[in-house]
Image (cartoon, rainbow over all chains, first blue to last red):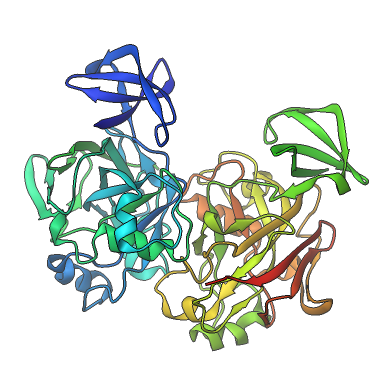
Length: 261
Length: 261
């Protein structure tokens, strides 16, 4: 099942995607809900980020083929020694199709990081890796937009990965996707493939990540855990279009613009 | 004016504190509201954390007399070189009177950090220091509970300052308090004074902090900025009671317990 959040007449609603339509639901998306008789063509609605997390967590270096890039950015010379997360800022969230904005005071520009996101479905505290899988509601796509100078020089990622518009999320939550079975995460920049890796190659999988976080943080329905990224992301320029696709889920497309001064 | 958030019959409400009573309000606490004819004795209600922030930001080392302690914890040997913030986790928030829980897997225990908190009142983006002061709705007290081993060894503060219960906030928001005029932030542990400093001694004041954060983050009504702490906090033990008072605002009291395994 695919759960979308969308806007019709300036009201945000949840719905189930069926073919080219989205059928509105009534109830709690993380609890029990029913579909209604109201449906819309996907082309007639504006998709929103499919979840409004209270908090989001990113892992440390989580794909072996990103090691070279990470070493260049931060000097880190080995994979994340633990599944230790960092907080990805909520203010950064934008919808499918929204502009990714390059801050005018960025000196080195911003890069894409295409990722798979796990959406928590239940209150989760001190669970095992095995239990953790059962607490995940579904998966979506995200772009962990990063300003490398701030990422390298600041003591946290508050703006390096948390500036406004640095967290495009969408297009919907797929509740049947299984990252253990694998889905390629593919990023294209203006149509050219620039990143590709499978979710099966995560160094710490979502079960490990969710279990580890839950030892100290009570996760809530809607909270999000990012997969980490792969390869060597590129700098994005004004006018670019960046697409993050996770095969089996869908594709998230966002244009890139420069912030006016 | 003092704005409290409290629980009566399991419903959370906002009210204006008048003497020993709290008068319920109708409307938007950050917009326009009216007082109603319903009031309660403060002794009959349970005070809640007076704000439900979307995000919270702490500063780096912000009081000169905390330098020695910070050096011992993290090796940092000078004041924060910029007003750079870090994200204080939302899951950590607890109410006045709630238990601060020592995680059973903490090896070195947890310490108090008594602080003054600024509560944002308006959507705030790229404002000057002067403008920033006008975006602050009011002030409350907070305890930036810290596990020093995790703070020192992890690459971010996600659990060192973000574990569940590590953010007691309250007792209410005081909209007339002026940190530039000064209010002593006093912490007592089982009645003994263990921290004291004035808000006028903040190295970066709230105008600077809010302005700096707003260059990259759109702050929302209810978001919170912490002052940073002072002196040499102590380890808290099960059975302790810790009180953070900001003179002119009020006092926030929390017992300390050990997490059962």
